[in-house]
Image 1 (cartoon, rainbow, N blue to C red):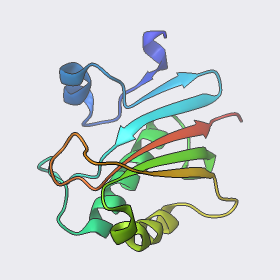
Image 2 (cartoon, helix red, strand yellow):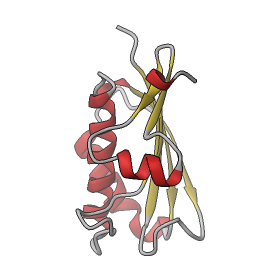
Image 3 (cartoon, rainbow, N blue to C red):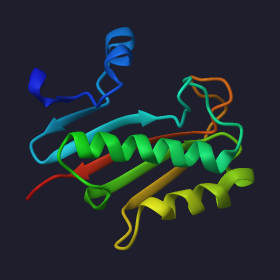
Length: 131
């Protein structure tokens, strides 16, 4: 990967430096967005599930915009959930505030733990940025 292929949105440089990964990487017309956990300004997941999911999608939107894309460019979404059945409706409600038909491919996976205590979801995305 060339350094110019790494996407680092405003506010992400410290994470890039500390954890050694890009918010996204571009390969040709494809943009691969790393897993995003919805956090507030203090770096903590909001207690309200829907607000946490909205925060994650806001970060995805920012990363896409930094790369010159939009939410409409998403072709694949993979979400990793704590308590999927409990939070499914809130997640779909939040997702539908950001995405619209034609819907991207989507895989939802239930898991036991995420990297930030209190986090309920991590979302990774592939977008096609072809003109």
